[in-house]
Length: 353
Image 1 (tube, rainbow, N blue to C red):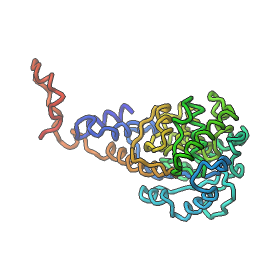
Image 2 (image 1 turned 45 degrees about the vertical axis):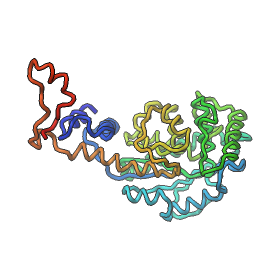
Image 3 (image 1 turned 90 degrees about the vertical axis):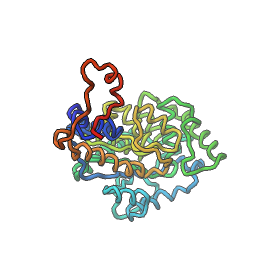
């Protein structure tokens, strides 16, 4: 990272003038262990699963939409497919526990169970199933990296999953439920109030232990949330940067961070979701979002858009000329003893006019 920063400071521009792009380039150097990181193959991993809590009426869409959207993903018709194509990324769709098997060609089948239990009435899954979800995510990360992926991105699909993500976020953060619950699929005010009550009931019934992330996942989480947490851990273990998408992925990132705090520096926050709980998640993780586009779709859409910025950061670092190589004069130094020039140095041009 020091070598990357030294090069950034010698490029033909005022120091720091590319802002976040420079910070991102330095961070990528640290993640990859290379002062000139380059991106090659990239993949968006969309993990899909159903949620028993959908029976409480917390979503604007029926539960069969999960399986229908899985088919849409592998057919290339979803928003993430469009944005991933633009970013030059492949989309890997993983069935972690869709209620009805999709039997769609191109889906990676890793079903742990046919959806979670209704968290308003009992636990989402057993502890053993939660561990299996995490381990599956690690396996998928290793699989994608073995295929050549140098950048991973998290994607999700599951009717009811913003309710589970809200429960995970409230359990870990200690924030009031109303502060982290959002409209998800676009529910109206009356159903939003119902959703808050459902999450409060889920926490009351299950009493997840905030000090035990596996317990939180098992009691109020989701199969795809566990899978994404494992994906993040697998990427970090392999020194591969992982773009964290929105609110669902943020819940997974919280779990991954509590399981292995050393994984956090390998996470890149792609964007700030419109879901209010996402800002809570990012504050807990200490991550700054690259984009603010009022998005709340999920699927990995924000992460796919952020891939362009990640590539831009690596290209700036590797392809821009330095002052020395380009024969460009560096910043003016104030004359010795010139107190006025020294005090005004911040306004002195660093490149010739």
